Length: 511
Image 1 (tube, rainbow, N blue to C red):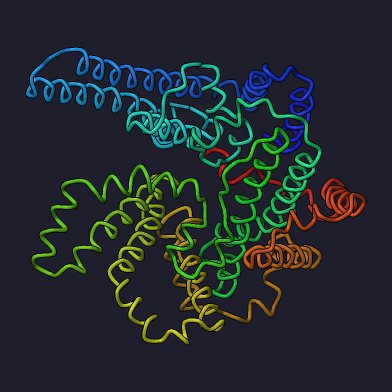
Image 2: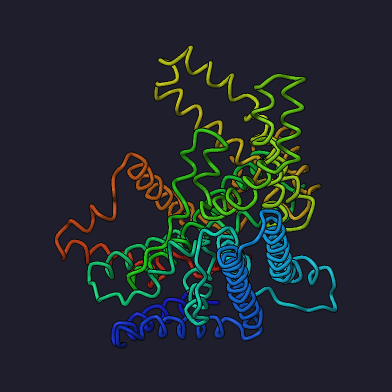
């Protein structure tokens, strides 16, 4: 999938959308979404159709079972024991249906992510965004199962919710009650909304093309040869990966959100300046917000509140006291969630270790929460200082970047080798001798990276302090706004700052 094709589909689709009769606009959006997905690979359409059909039909059947039970309970004069049996039988049938649909969709996801790569003869390509639309559909199905949503009876309207094309790049994972109404509403042409969308698209492309793609050669050079560099060069490589991954992922999300705004649709935010976080938990509440929300609502809480965990917590209370008992569900829930997130990234030891690294730190933090709270109460003046806040941000940044060693490495042994070299063999002289210039980047590249990263930091800092940057730009006179937009667009189109030799697809496009 090329960025130019995505943008062309977005602009053409937006033009057709507002020319289309209002009542048919959602159907036009569905056609554009499927055309885009087919362009990216016809082989992927059966997976998308299977997920759409199974979760749509499954949700309808779940609602039908509930309606049938309600009708029988209200229409018949039956004994309390018979009512209990009816409810139990309906619950078993609903659970069987739910697990059947979940197994089908998670099975397809596991097939293309884990089984096919391990079997060379089974040559299955990874469908674009399969994890994102699978999780989105599963969330819808679970919400219907739990009675939070009424099912969508129109299969084509539901198909649009699953396939809305900007999200297929790399999310976010939308909730039906937040997105569906916007998709079906016949939005009117709004020039200001187009401006806002174009601004966000250009900003996303800037992060992707100027920062992420330019940082890529150094990252690949460092991680492809784990024993060839000293710790100082490796540390720089990890920092560049931190920058590359954030600019790539958040840039793609900004691009998707900007395209959606061309159609008058607002996607849920997926990043909230995570590198300003003051703890690891705070970081993961700001990074890939929609995945964190999905894991919290459909994995963490159901696990933490299930009977075996609550029973274990009660047993711990009798032996170790209420503090340990209260922390146990959250601690174990975090370990499970991040183990699953690690495996979602890949079923290899380095991702498992990455997940456990984050999960164990969060589990320990859950047990230490009372101590943190007492420290804050006893040293309130210190905790309120900017210096202490900055120290917490730097500590979190260090913890996160240690985790990136495992996230980016091809194997667990490679991650451990890189970590060992970073600590035990820093070889600072390599930085002075120009080793960083051996990865295909020259002085101009480093200068552009520094300027672009500085701009990203400055805008993020303003947003962190409550400044609505886009709104501030939109408040400027029209010539000023368009001068800024055109300047950024021309820079990106001209290649003056992007550097055509460093192009790559989005990191999470095939997740």
